[in-house]
Image 1 (cartoon, rainbow, N blue to C red):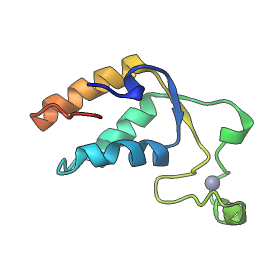
Image 2 (image 1 turned 135 degrees about the horizontal axis):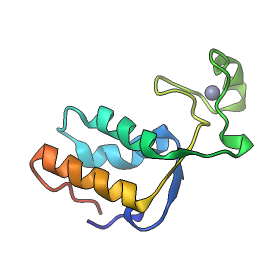
Image 3 (image 1 turned 30 degrees about the horizontal axis):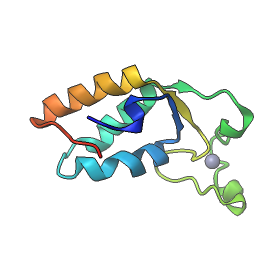
Image 4 (image 1 turned 60 degrees about the horizontal axis):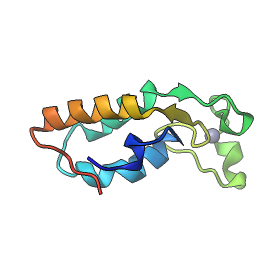
Length: 103
Ligand SMILES: [Zn+2]
């Protein structure tokens, strides 16, 4: 398994995480839940630019271009540690019955 997630902490939104990892999980029906689980393992990034919109206000923020969607506020980021990613990846590969290879 070779991937930047396994090497260094990453600060990502759920959208960025999905964009990066979904292509490797084609054909895994529970991929979306697994990715949300992984993202929630991360500690919320406390910096102001990562603070999510107040509930129901993402629409008003659309003019700023951050375009929140069904996964929640796009501004919200979490810090994923390599150890968390590795544990998650092993679990996902075991559940999928194959090693999911990242390039
Ligand atoms: Zn928002």
